[in-house]
Image 1 (tube, rainbow, N blue to C red):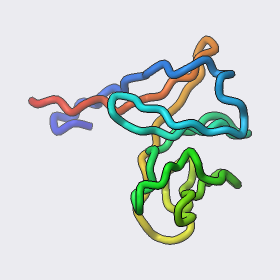
Image 2 (cartoon, rainbow, N blue to C red):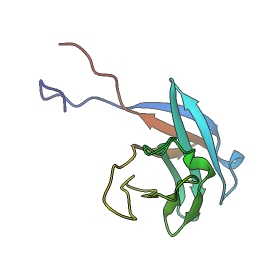
Image 3 (tube, helix red, strand yellow):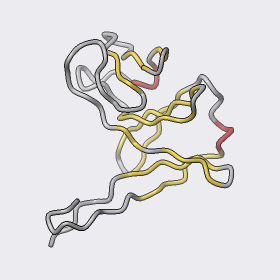
Length: 116
């Protein structure tokens, strides 16, 4: 919610045909200057901030297991659904909603803040 109480709408961006990313694979995409890691798992698509906050490891290059991804540099683990750090307390990573519509994979970016 904004300071005035109005909800900001997300901006949905069409990424690629849904079948372009095989199940079990991950890829990094750049959308509006943001690096985002997109994962295709058994339970669907997930999108997280592209870099680990520790030393900027590319999360799309990490090992995925049990609904989590491990940073390839130092194995910090993040929940694919929530972005929460799962191996211990620590900084979470941003999560981006995904959706498949008419055979295309979409990703939601937060709406920009608007000056009132």
